[in-house]
Image (cartoon, rainbow, N blue to C red; front, side, top):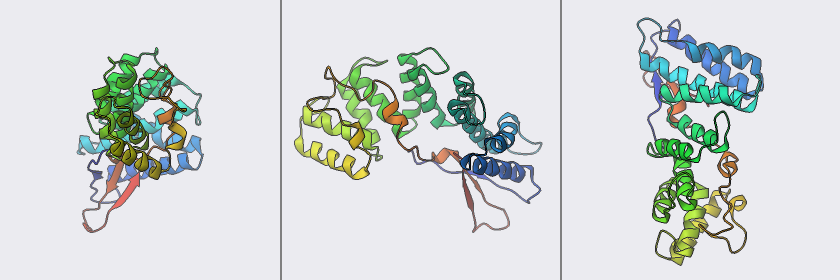
Length: 265
């Protein structure tokens, strides 16, 4: 995940509308985690729709609104407390993107790739991957690298594949570490280098989630039986960490030494 500054909501007092909004956001998050989807929807939907309170920073309200929109997208995507509706999920993810949620760009791309909420479109998927990848999102960088490796939505280009997979691998993305290792072993997009291959294979294994993404014996990047990315299951099955741009931090003006981080994904 990209290292981005945490969002901050500075509140002068508990009666500040921003504090009330942040409290509702945290409550909605807890309800979602506890499986109380009705309570989560009650808290998140108004925050996703609301504008800034008079006299408040628009950016501060956006930081709250985009998290609520992102969460609503996930609820509609998974049918959590609402009927499963891919079009509605995509709509909320797009709104979150408009509010500055870079990570939602990746999910929009995955939905285009899988044909969920929109016609299946690999070119559009790759475009959204690139938008997120250029902002440093490791998962998006890895997906874009695979797209270049197999020519899915973009022209096949092993050098570009290696470049994007390396960027993701350097951020600890185990899937990309494995793919980059295979490319070094096979000499595709990079000079053949068994030492580099061994290093990246080892790093992928140390990450603990590489076993399920290895191709069967004899397969390599670009091979006719390449199956790493027939769909987005490889990435969507991986645990998604909380993107730093989805963390809202409260720091009361009266106590600059204390801060409370609310993980809102």
